[in-house]
Amino acid sequence: MLAVILLACTTVLAGIVPKTGACNPVIPGCSTCTGTGDGQTCTGCTTDGQKVQPNGKGCIAKCPANSNEAGGICTCTETYQPSKDGQTCVPKAGACNPVIPGCSTCTGTGDGQTCTGCTTDGQKVQPNGKGCIAKCPANSNEAGGICTCTETYQPSKDGQTCVLKTACNTPNCKACDNPKTDNEVCTECNDGNYLTPTSQCVSDCTTLKGYYGNDTNRKCKKCNDACVECKGEGADKCTACPAGKKLTYTDDSHPNNGGTCGDACKVSADGTGCETCGAQIGGTAYCSKCKTSTQAPLNGNCAANTRTRFCTTVSNGTCTQCENNYFLKDGGCYQTDRQPGKQVCSNAQGGTCQTCANGLQVQSGTCGECHSTCAMCSTANDPNKCKTCATGYYKENGSDTTDGLCKKCSEKISGCKQCVSSSGSSVICLESEVGTGGSTNKSGLSTGAIAGISVAVVVVVAGLVGFLCWWFICRGKA
Image (cartoon, rainbow, N blue to C red; front, side, top):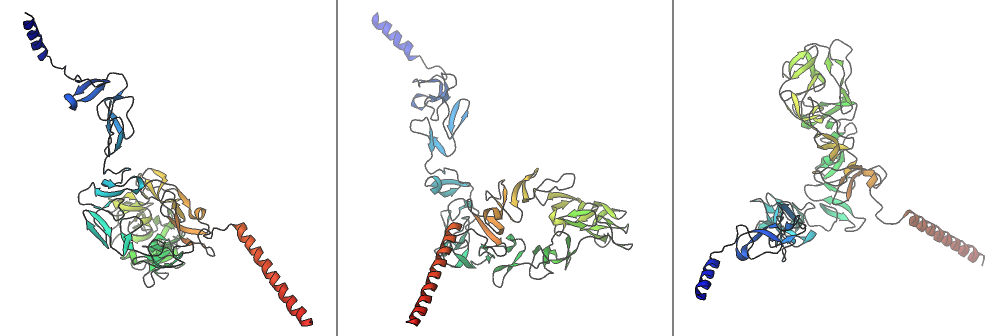
């Protein structure tokens, strides 16, 4: 009889199965689970407010750093994995931490880590190992998707190209005096670069406003005094004029060759020419209404709308609708590939401006002005956020891809007129005021120290003169 009861009990127990969603074996703190046996994972906690820990084997008060929380469950972010106890998130082996944009795998840790693989198929690890590029640059070799500079070359400052190895600290400098000292002066730049007035090297001399690249001596040379910007030597090579002057191209069909700067708009004294100089661009007046009713302003000058039709509707000396590839401004039509229109608009369609040259959004067919310290705004609807800086200013954060304040060059480097941001908080002066070095005191001596040395020199010289006088006078009497 007892044997029958035991058999019956065994049979009943064998038919018992865990409830759906129950944890079996029990995971402390968990109310529900998925999976079976050792492979089961916690999906809910018994205590209100607690979260399922990253490895799914228990509950914790809150999700740890480097994890996301969804539905009360903590999940480690892409480059992290659960720790040994499962309660925190640690970097994955080979993961980039912190993340290097474009890189999928890395070696090393912290700032010393190096990219070893790219997230985008076909891309290569750039020469300095701090990012990915479309293809390996000149003077480099590629192996396993990684670019390495050849023996006599080294990664450039941005790490994306290879530059000739040099004994000089100045970026892209081939030869210099006093190499690797505070008094280093670059005398010759690497191929493809030009020497600035402050002995720096740039790939494009138009980085300095008012300069052009002299290909004979590979130096940045100042434009003619009549020009603000220029294509080359001479007053007929101007590409931009100072405020109050307008540019007349030497060959109107080739505006990139430059022209001359002359007087701004003037009201004509006879029956032809300009009647009203009502358009203002860059501090210069341009015509807004012509005296001849069948003419209209084209690029700020009165022109007949016949040979090259630029205006759809001419009305009493003005244009009310421009042709395609022109944009309407103050009664005239302007082109985006030449002055003065290129100062305002970079893309025109259907007779109106589509893209403002300064990065702001077109509003009712017109473009506003960026803050006076900005050359280009970084945000279409905020004139106070700079992408690039006006002449004489530098980007404090050194980036053209993010918002940043523009500060005066002379506030960073005494006597500096034009400068650019370098790495970190470093600033490179490209042009200095006449009579100044345009750089900080590299000797490191304070004004007081220099004054003290000067006094000491005077005392020594005076003593020497006194001794010589005594020697010759006294010895002469003897």
